[in-house]
Amino acid sequence: MNHLSRRKFLAALASAGAAGLGGVLLRRKPAYAASGAGEQTTSQAAPASAAERLFTNRLRLPGASGLYAVVAARDVRQITVSELDFEVLPGLPSPFWAYVAEVDGKRLLNPTLLARRGDQIKLRMVNRLKQPTIIHWHGLTNDERNDGVGHYQVAPGESFDYAFTVRDRAANYWYHPHPHDIAGEQAYRGLAGLLIVKDDDEEKLARALDLTLGVTDIPLVIQDRGFSFEGKLEYKLSREQMFMGFLGEEVLVNLTVRPYLDAARRVYRFRILNGSNARGYRLAFAQGDRLLDYYLIGTDGGLLEQPQKVQEVFIGAAQRLDVLLDLREAPGSGPVFLKSLAFDPMHNESVDENTGKPAAATAQGGADPHAAHAAPGAIADGTETPLLRINIKSSPEYTRKIPSQLSRLPKLAATAGEPRRFTLGHDGEGNWTINGWRFNRHETPVTVRRGARETWLLQNNRASMPHPVHIHGFQFRVLERRGSPAQVMALAMRRNGLLPQDAGLLDTVLVWPGESVRVALDFSHPFSGDQTYMFHCHNLEHEDTGMMIGYKVEA
Image (cartoon, rainbow, N blue to C red; front, top):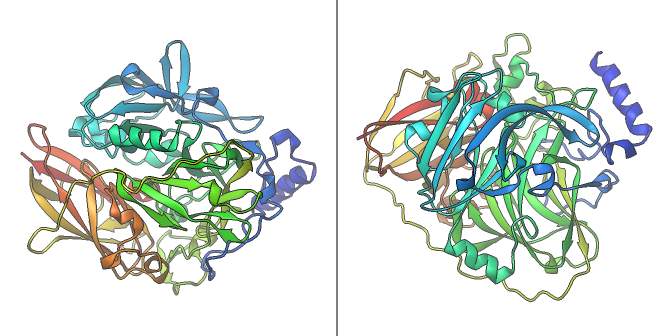
């Protein structure tokens, strides 16, 4: 069936009514795609549209149907990587890949693992896929074997034993597949889970605000997806889409399409993960035409020292944001929407349809080449998109106040001398590169000394696109941003062009075209021998096509 007949089919399905789909309207061009990429935006949010009122599917919370169920990490002895059926769209089972654990007779899918610093995690991964796979513990400081990269990928039917100590700060970490060349497909088909590390500061905050995980302290996993006629997950990429990264036709939250949450007039904590393959978001909370203040309290590496009041924050693929939303500050009784505001995605490279190679660059703010080369009906990157409807319900009086002090951050400062420089670009042949290198599993072009403190300068070419850069094994601090585009500079709240999220520890940093980001790293670790890690773009299609290099920490 061609794309035109597919659109007619989906339109007919929508006009026939969506009750059988729990309120979901399947279509190739979502009606809520109100403003295109590259349009000028203001600080005002648009009134709720008819499409926004279609958010009629209850948000999946941790534990529903076993999905994201919360369990102590030390109680999980085995994770089986499995193919199964799951209703991503209500009433429409789809093939789905999941991390499956059995704990106390219960079957858990992509369980949310809870741990404290110092906990021992020992578990066996069993691969029941038809492809090799491996689990990467994203953000944790582990030895190379337990870090989980393609050097240790596990063949179908085989198993792999992990044994490591949680050494990092309390934070919202996650785990996902990292086999060479196919990580994007495996993550897209469902493989992603959360690992939440807690400590005294975390528990103090929960007591101060009367927060309960899964009730008023809610993880939000944001992922865009595409579907077949039958409502099944679909991952088919052209060469152009491999170059730009996957974009879907619906944005899901906790694998719920067009979700809603009933909430009291109180403070909520949202632990937000951008689990999309490639899409970025400009996150805001809006009530009608008014953007609400919210409070950034944590990043990839845990709590900030003080809350940062914001109205919007950019989040790239693999990044995490920890936020507080005080619904007492929402003036009316109407719903509040978590949405991604419109922005210029700065995909300044177009691609030749026949060769898959870069063609002439477009002017900043012009047509988005990603829109032309994404799957038919995909939401163009940078389009304003509602993500979650929050219905405010009557509730008992709530008088808790957000603490002014959250934690103490370890200090990471710039080192003397010139930084190591890494340029993010492409080779003119349709391949993204780092310093002109593409990934070779037998090479480690970068070597550092154990215990060294270094400054790295990440420079993105102007004729490029945003790259969320992930460094395995070590968290880092952002020291400075230069050459940031106007839409990014407008959000800078600190000296040296730093954004609110730059106040925390990171393992992934979004580097925009023309921007240079200087970061400080400390390569101290307790492991014996040389350790080899990865450094790559977390646009998973970029990673799969070679925008990754190995680096060695010599003993």
